[in-house]
Figure 1 (cartoon, rainbow, N blue to C red):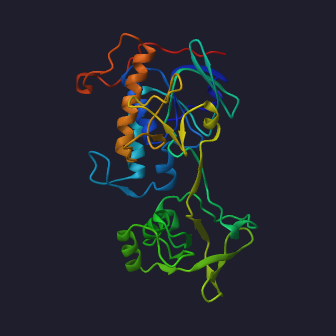
Figure 2 (figure 1 turned 135 degrees about the vertical axis):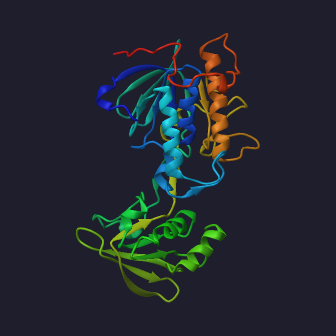
Length: 347
């Protein structure tokens, strides 16, 4: 769905720039099309779907309306299909940089040297840019076999997998990969796992080799991982465990990066917004997990509603005289969408 970067000018114009291609950002793209807005979607990750696609594509999600259960990958695929109706320009593996205001809108410069002029910006960046927490034992290891992003479960068939961590991600991946892998070993430095009780019960019954009060002391292998040495932190004993895949599931470090320089009102790593999702910074709105306000509930379903609220308010700002309420979608033909104003390339 993404537009080849080589075909996109280094300077372009759009009515709405959406920063963040997770679920809220994808839905915002679709809804911008509903309002007839020309939209550009920007994300620092090399793929669509944000944290859902990167961290738990095969985990089932239960709190999305209309789906008793849906995997992250299935949900992202549906959201991409829906967002495609708006015919957005997609810029992946490209991060938002400095923001400047001018008479007709704002300009956002990216880390690839691109200049995007927009009537408005909607930030749907989730937890911001996130990087995996480092595993000290990997400091001197440069070979293959370290999977910070986990692939399809079938890719681990007949492989020996080591998962490091004790939270939801680590336990969920252990449960997901165990039916496929030759052997799965979970290593956690504390006595108790921090994952959901049901997931821990499933893990205990699965036959996964669980090593608590333990840590990875050394990673062995030349071209790729061949084994790890596990240290029992209580007994101070060392055990060699054969493995060809190591998954560090230690969580991620989030950062707003250049967004911190925009002049937004921040509450920790979140952006403070009002009821219309306005940030208080002219022509900049926010939606999804990155927002903060009294009573905020960080659910994906809430993010979808915030995205629609933001886009409707943006549409009124960009086109004075239009109604805030867009009408019922059942009264509109969604394919194809006719943009009321087609933005032009600017070289």
